[in-house]
Amino acid sequence: MSIINLLPDHIANQIAAGEVIQRPASVVKELLENAVDAGATQIQLFVKDAGKTLIQVLDNGKGMDAQDAQKCFLRHATSKLQTAADLFALQTKGFRGEALASIAAIAHVCLKTRQESQDIGIQIEIEGNQIKHKQEVICQKGSSFEVKNLFYNVPARRNFLKSDAIELGHIQTEFERVALAHPAIQFSFQHNGQDVMQLAAGNNRMRIAAVFGKGSNEKLVPIEEHTDIVRVSGYIGKPEMAKKSRGEQYLFVNDRFFKDPYFHHAITKAYDGMISEKHHASYCIFLEVDPQKIDVNIHPTKTEIKFEEDRFIYSILLSSVRQALGKHNIFPTLDFESENAFEVPSDVRKSEPIAPQILVNPSYNPFQSTLHQSSKSSGGAKNYSSALQQEGFGSTPPSPEDWQQFYQITQQETAENQEIFETDTSSKQFLLHDKYLVSPTKSGFLIIDINRAQNRILFDELIQRFVAQPLASQQLLFPIERSLAKDAKLTWQSQKSLWNQLGFVFELAEDILQIKAIPALLSSLDLDLCLDELTDAAAYQDIDSGDVAHFIVAKLAYLGAKHFKLQHAEEVEHFIETLFQSSQHTTTPNGKPIMFTLGFDELAKKL
Image 1 (spheres, rainbow, N blue to C red):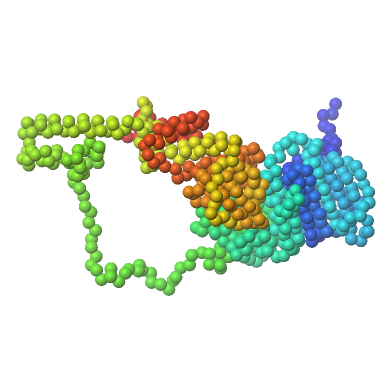
Image 2 (cartoon, rainbow, N blue to C red):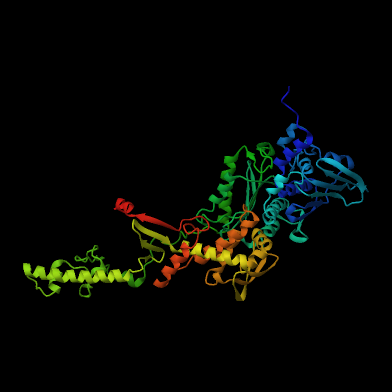
């Protein structure tokens, strides 16, 4: 009995769909690229519920006749290849003929298309790769693809989709990648009936500035380099345009977006000394390489490309970015005309140099605690001879009776000082540099990080308040306005109810965020820095919708505890009691330790 079976077409298509169509953004990518390959000058994208309900792409490209409209949904059906040699001379996007077949296998698809030479178009409706309906219709020139109920027959894949905000972010990323590669095409993007992006046709700089956000145009530096190996063009951002979050790094080869950590390293290396390690430079760079010297068919999504001369391209890319930064005076300049000497004020030049003197106190004793000094010896630790002289025993060597009397005096002072020490430390805790709280235990010392402990206390308090009612807000006398990048705009727009619950009152118009009220917790902090960190927390791309609030509240608690200090001794006991009431008092919300015990055995080993 044979154990090898041929898979049915519908199962094979679903397996292929699992590789090509991973989420709604994958459908958007394939349909947009097909519209570009069709020669469209206008492309519209309509999305509902982050692509789970509807994805529609309209273009004014060449369109298809009835025969091609039906064949395009078959596996390995493509207009981009005729022979195997064409794989090494690709000038188009899709070419393997799996995208539409994969989409039709896991969604309800409706295609309307018409060629310019025809008066009547064709409409085809497909479910699970089965043609359900086909008829002639009146439609515009070009093609319209409607993809509804994505993953309707693969519920496991649908259940693994993230929140609408996260999926919409992925869709916008794919939209921007295609739009940046083709600035001569007019693009528009709507989600649930609201405009997300409207991109007019123009040049590279106009398109990059429109995608990167308002105010980015004057921060772009052009880059241009022509060699026999590669032609480099595009724009890089000035150092002040660098951001803590990634997202504004785009590499294209022959107008095809790709990812390459090797080339990314070359670009970031050119910024050495100009931006910190925690920030990421912005760039949009286009490479033109002989198609025969690259392989774009090594990954299902075609975002990884193999270069034949990658080492040379790395060096050229590094040199080009450095040269562009240098041309626009981004690097600090050196004045080679000035004298190679220190500039010394004239009054100092005429004075005689004075040799430095080091003053040493020979009677200083670092092991003599100031707590064990009486008011008579406040000038510093003394040796026995000096102490005897202070007690009135004279400068001559002391007699045995003198030693006995001096011993009784020092014993009395020591007992008094010990009593004072015990009285002052009745709370059994003391502060260390306003950062740590140290408390002696039977086996050693318990050391508590005050800021991290306050982080945990605030987080628990905010979570309890947040569930019941909005956090307390503080109205701003003058509203704060700031321009937002594309990802930040999406974060504030999609999570508006959450921001309101946290105490933020704001309005969003185009790329401008106007904040009218902030949480009272942030009133004494650097608001610009806080807004950046909160936006990054809300834009975290690998969390479910239920965890977004947790991340933002955790960041809010972190910011509120950043500069916390215990002002009075009375606060210490209450502070510790509040901390230990938490079930998670040993770690912060993001898992960092709050306290640890330094045992006497470990202390003895150190000494």
